[in-house]
Image 1 (tube, helix red, strand yellow):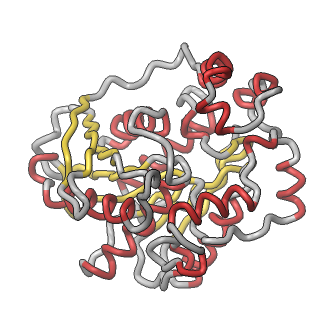
Image 2 (cartoon, rainbow, N blue to C red; image 1 turned 135 degrees about the horizontal axis):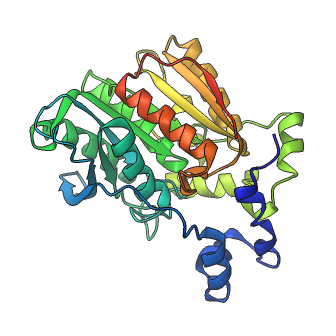
Image 3 (spheres, rainbow, N blue to C red; image 1 turned 135 degrees about the vertical axis):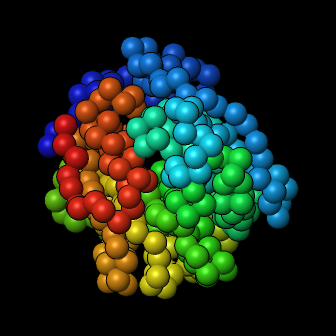
Length: 328
């Protein structure tokens, strides 16, 4: 399908911007940045939000807790999602739409408690395993805090988008191995599972020619992000840092959610195939017309809403969904 007009209509705003880093950081492009990300008609769900912290090996891990407050908070039967935003392991925050909007929408749609994790970013000498350790600590904290959160400790899932999906998968593997119990489910949204991203197909490459260069992820960019995450060469990576390198047997039911116009889809597709080969209950779903990072868009956009509904249904019953394609 063509790129969704909610995204393609804003491409002209990017003309003259030299890079994504310049768009995000250079004050000369502040107006472009504001216009490109503005969605004034979208009203986020009004759910209860509070802050807390999980104890971790590198110090407290800040978390933000989203609760729809529907009167079931003391029932102890609700699912929980521990959620990680993206940002190439070096950017992003709890305030970005992919963190805040997504958490609000899923708390409402799934009747779940969502714990959004402010893991340490790989800047100023921070590298793997620090963000990974933060996420594992947050998941363990959520399970141990089930009573105060009003959740079922057996229904704690992990998930994330982009780099956050990588961290979620790595945490699921660590919990399987170290605790003998993986999470209830894994949500892997347009994530990076490989230390070296598999090459895209010819058909996929043709689609990517429709995407502005600054919104693509060429090998030079992904290599920089991954080396920065590791703090060393990718040849030294293990399966907790890049889950495609792990023994995937015994992992929890997994939803792999890809975007049609995304170089990183090749990693998600290969990861889903490896999960299936390992006997994992995995469902791979593609959001057609969407680019990488589409959970930063408002839920009023059809494919975004459909993706959120699919994630919410997965949280309610991780092993009950068929494969599907999300269309505009």
